[in-house]
Length: 94
Image (cartoon, rainbow, N blue to C red):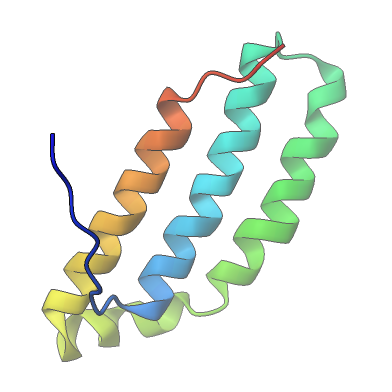
């Protein structure tokens, strides 16, 4: 399949929230691939605190992003849906 690189406008808060969520999912997926155990609680909790909590700071602005620029909001959702699906399907080395 041929691809091209394009530059698009995406809603900031939606994209950051999705990226934070994708990082948490990646850490959780790695833990599952390694055989989820008690030692995985700290990395997962750390990812929630370091990656997701900062992204949640702008959650109240997402409604405005959707109202003010729906195409950019949809782009943000699509970009982050792709990142999340990559983390879900990624196989981590044990």
